[in-house]
Amino acid sequence: MMKCLIVDDEPLAIDVIKKHVDRIPFLNVLGTTSSAFEAIEIINTESIDLLFLDIQMPELTGLELLNSLRKPPLVIFTTAYQEYALESYELDAVDYLMKPIPFDRLLKAVNKAKVRLGDSSKS
Image 1: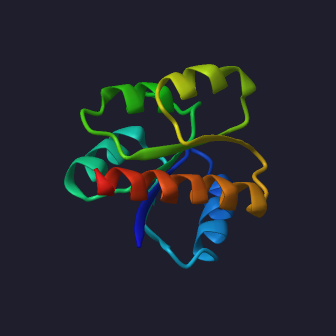
Image 2: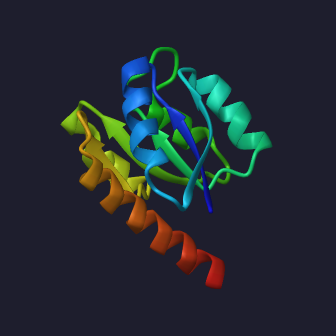
């Protein structure tokens, strides 16, 4: 079971991602937050395997949040902005999903994360 956290400043986006994630049996949403600072606190206290992370958020962007973590979980960016895609891959993101996010595209990204997590647990 992969433990996830959804971080987005738009409640509607959180709802859509959560509904998609709830359909996938091997995912468990430990929480949702609209605050990057709350997300950092959760990541530092909980064992999070996968982060669904928006980029454009007030106070701290998703990219800044990811850069601030010493041992970040796997990340799937969820955003309405194409221009950060290259930087996301430089940060070793699993995938980069454009809003609105169709279920099949999210499932493909999650399966990539599952493979990557399985590979890392074998080494």
